[in-house]
Length: 136
Image 1 (cartoon, helix red, strand yellow):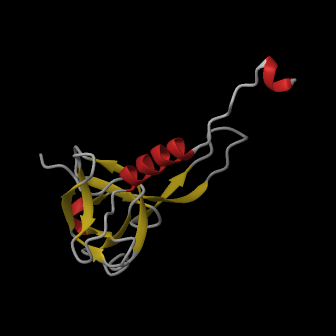
Image 2 (tube, rainbow, N blue to C red; image 1 turned 60 degrees about the horizontal axis):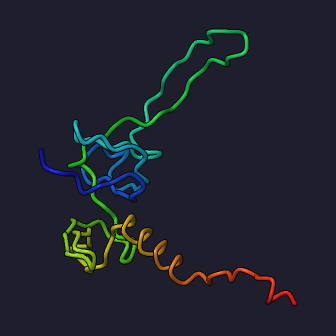
């Protein structure tokens, strides 16, 4: 199976489907690579009827998102804001990063977080240990 270009936390736009969901955008909550499906927050909602099982539980109708096939959604570039395909470019550390097909911006959020963490740790000032001679 081919790897998926969409990860949890990405913003996607529905490109195929019913009129109710087509063109809407949302954040990916769950990604299932085995079935090639994603769950998008606030989209493809179904109503579930729940009966209270105890006196403390409350019954009623609840809306919950259902999975959408990954081929029916397109990744939204955080830089240009357009739904786009994904290119892969070689990063500084030798790993491939996701990039926008339209504007060329790097989309890979995990790599950016790792780079900012390492940059912060390198830029953090070192605390000097006090010795007896320093105190006097």
